[in-house]
Image (cartoon, rainbow, N blue to C red; front, side, top):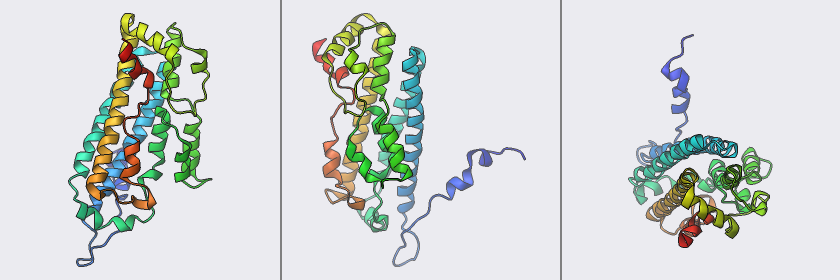
Amino acid sequence: MNTTYGSYLKVQPLLDLQCSLSVHPTTGEPEHDEMLFIIIHQVYELWFKQQLHEGDHLARSLIAGDQVQASSTLKRMLTILKTMVQQIDVLETMTPISFLSFRDFLSSASGFQSWQFREFECLLGNKNPRILGHNPEGSHERATIERRYHAPTLYDAFARFIAKSGHAVPAELLARDCTQPPQEWVAFQDTLIALYRTHPVERQICELLVDLDEGVQEWRYRHVKMVERTIGFKQGTGGSPGAAYLRTTLFTPLFPDLWAIRTRL
């Protein structure tokens, strides 16, 4: 059997995944904008899958000391992140009234339950034990998040990259509890400052990580404003806190050392 475009990409099964739940009370047809809502979020899940794929590759490259591959992978992740931000523009073409026409059909479903996004957060180092509670204990989703929660982060891989390059890295950082949230390591900042001044290759990796951190913060900000624009400060679907909680996630750096050194340079 010959491989075709459709069979290789599983196009028909993919197109069968957009199943509407809502029905217009007058026409009996699905609410028009529900299709957009479903597709946007399914596409986000595909991008999360790719970001995890690239992020794991990045971690392996850093640990191996492969500067060229690490730089290339970071640039790809940044380009994907820009696309993820731009998708919000498409979602914002949906008015609050349009969303309300099918919102009740979401029932207990909530973006808080996206285990791939929680995995991505853990990979980036944003770990909080509360994220484990959004999916039932014993479920595949919960187990997947738990594995990421207990695994080293990109910053752990970065610290090993710097150490492998022959530069001083505090032993406490290399042996840290990787379930803890990001923190500053002043002694490591001294090393980073020296690298910025004398090692352009390592400096490029640092700057690309800052770009990644800033890009994630931009995505969070746009996501918050989109939620506010659509439902204001109402409770989110599935009983989630909505925009009020999302605001608390803004402007918290993933790699605080790389931001702190700018005041000291």
